[in-house]
Image (cartoon, rainbow, N blue to C red):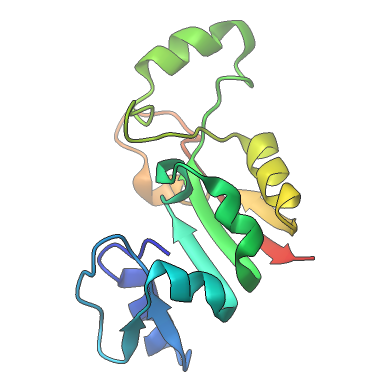
Length: 153
């Protein structure tokens, strides 16, 4: 969900995943052999894995997560460290490049992401910030991206 330019679904197809589909707000061209599904079909269908990278923070109503029929869920969101930073959190948040008011509607830290997904029937398998290795800007301190893998209970 939120496939962007289709890089992840293309990689899945190349590695042999037979049924790959993409759902996005705009129907950007998908690689050969990858089908487009609209929002209703994405929620109605059964999936082995749903991936949402840089998506959850943009969706106003996250209640759809409870209706998602998938065995596994992979997510990546901007890592909001406001709570972890304690007294320094407010100053950090004011200048955080991923804050993006009017675009990022939700902000997640480790606890809030796990709690949101647990509330919607998912168990956390792993959380990490491995994407920082490729996404941090020069001179920027991480963690900045929170990635997680979850399984449906």
